[in-house]
Length: 144
Image (cartoon, rainbow, N blue to C red; front, side, top):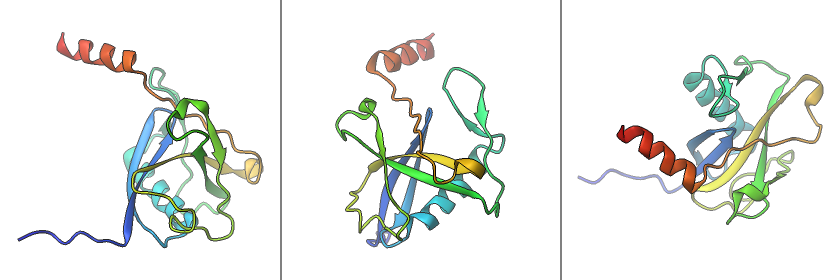
């Protein structure tokens, strides 16, 4: 018997530093609720903080559940075919949803977490995009 696959959802990829988190979200969910789901997933996966880079053990602490002054800010690629070009902030303050922003299945969004004095400021998105050469080096290391 085939499994029923919900058709009211969309898979999105959220990137920060070296981390990519896939979430299946409701197309009509607001980005406030999507941000809360993303934080819950990150807290579970990275209880000691979100990795900042692939090479260094530095982490960014995640806000505790229920911490009222933290919010997730999202960005879209300046060029969807070349993520290294950078990201522009996505305005999600008016209850936008994946549907209202016309996001497609497997869309990529950068994210950053703002809290305290940084809330409302211009967000800065740090996303590490692996290159083909880096991926080849990683495969060679695994073969040894």
